[in-house]
Length: 235
Image (tube, rainbow, N blue to C red; front, side):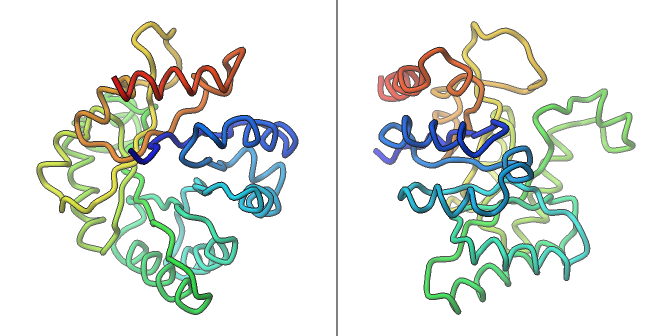
């Protein structure tokens, strides 16, 4: 079975990130570089992780005018990332530009295009939070609306919470890749992730990839924590 675990390197330095990559490469399907690490360590951290042979998910959630996003995507393709994110709420034209440039830039460089993922609703948001920012307070309805738009724009993947996976699987092409953050054990203490499920539950509903940060990286033994999750998935 392909390893579906993408470890979120939510750490402040390149040294801490690379230590985790070296520990976890045998038990991880890839590594997520997000805003904190990218701002601290810059594009070089992506090059160094790729140099170790590990896939990279660049999670910077581009959200700007189509031309600006297209240029950011082209720069990400040059870093040879395997996945990257854009906010689906940026609109159809922005999403189309991101996918088009990902394909064109990869073709020019002679490698496979990264999976451009449309971020639907952040897993930290719930009904109250959506109302506060003036959006439809019905989470699943808002996710459905954004997912439809992303699909029409040609995106091949989405980021959504585990709570929306089953619904999206019924309405999207089977080939659509669903990348799921907010993975927590039932015994985990509450944090800023509102809409969570366990790794096994999310995969059973139709998730393709699981983004897991704190349950692995904050563990006393990150390698052992990742192995426990893999065992849970396989059982």
